[in-house]
Image 1: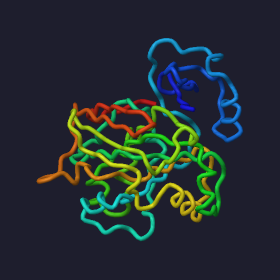
Image 2: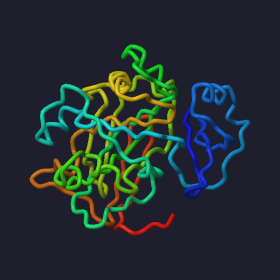
Image 3: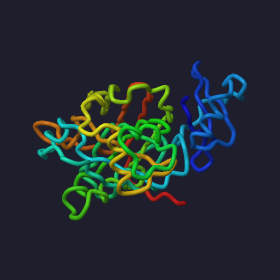
Image 4: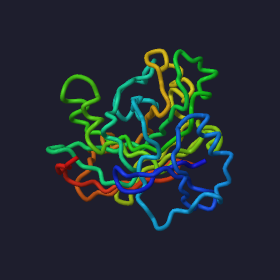
Length: 279
């Protein structure tokens, strides 16, 4: 299944995309294996079609953790001038940075090094604590496309952890869909790509991840309990702005970023100057 949420910011409704590409309203939905099983038993054509082309929001709600893995592709570590990690590098993105896949992204006030990263996101479907790697995928509800937008000066040059360059407002576009794992198949064989202003910058495949999805879920469950709706974003292939040659290239207002992962759909964001957004 391809699950989604649609509608204006703060007023999103749960839906799904059927095999014909029709968006359908599903009413109240619960991100759990029981909830997914109930949805799977429903014939999509029996659900009301959504009219028009509404905005996509984040494809699920209720996330309490947005966990990220750094330097998880060997060739990206090389372009960053860093050794491959011997254990997963963990940081967090603020839940407040989550937004729809095609919403505008704000470049932080004074930023000079806002960057792009196409990433595979893992969505937890049931509570996981100290799970074995062999059983880890049993705890996964599905997968999403993520642009792990980053501010490199804040991340690297401002002292402390990476988190301050990763959780700025609007830095977490997710979606368009949550694709259940049965529809994705082998998650370690998915093509990934990202364009900036129509120029291909990133090309990769999840087969080159240093630590695969099962390892990451198992590893993280040693340090924190993973709960339904928690997101793990799993690292990026080479081609980020920081690694461009002969000089790094960063995003500016007006730039358009388009990205996708096989089976998980596409996103497109326009980057804009920072502005105050009232709650």
